[in-house]
Image 1 (tube, protein in one colour):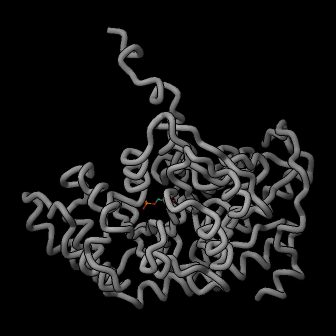
Image 2 (cartoon, rainbow, N blue to C red):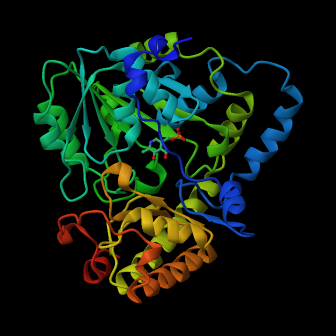
Length: 400
Ligand SMILES: Cc1ncc(COP(=O)(O)O)c(C=O)c1O
């Protein structure tokens, strides 16, 4: 059987997403007893106790299919932001919703506009549908919304903004968003992916996109239970948009896309505001400490409003440094696939995990300085120095 001839060309060309390495696999590969995962921007404090209670209750009903519309959760989410349930959709992670947007709106003759180093799933949603993906350079590691608006053509259907962006951690402000919406034709849907909303919403100038939606702007807002709510393993995310957009996405949404376990845990988590506060406080404190420690070591860090940091490891390659961390039982992410061959991304962990990260980093830097560079491959050409966009020790002190 010639399988290739059966496969759509879009799928043949498709570059699959490479997730962070799982703990069990790294333990096996390197024969390690302890492995710290700082690779997927999860909340190291874990889920709410209320979510665990809800999971135990729902476990007695696992022989039943889940509620297809995630009705209770939809209502709870609608109440939380002051929209009707007809403006809410729940997905198996916000990932599924990004893909649904692609399936509903994009044909091969259409275009989407993304930022060059934005979360990769946007480009992948376009690639899967065979449409043209217009990638716009960043400014200071941040989505350049003005340039993105100039990239819009009559063929543009969707413009994606990750706010804050993964992997850079940077965010765009309300002012920039207002200017973008004013510049765009109303026929373009602007999707704001706010997976890290709970960490970023108190940052200066962070936009209130729900207010824009209420005002009738052509926007969709995506959020998730995978990050601060600590439910990444259950796969559950959600979105807000115009009722007609939600109804259209719902038409092709798989009938039981979100498990009953995920729905129950999410409803319970939503009611636990203390868990969110604890997750946010951990990140604020530890991000501050980590930034200070890194800048003290002369490492350049991109300012982040999320629960991770992107670091410049020039002249070393991100992959080399990632591998050196792996051997020491710490999983971070190399950023080559995001177009940053000399950067790594590290999730803010528990205090002890962050200390282990720094200890391993010191070890790796010392090794490198001692010319034991064979442990790392430095074969990647150096990027331009973009020093002004980084947090320096002085700039960090100013912001803190
Ligand atoms: C910007 C961004 N959007 C969406 C997601 C996907 O989240 P989910 O687990 O809800 O699919 C991630 C996960 O890392 C992310 O960083």
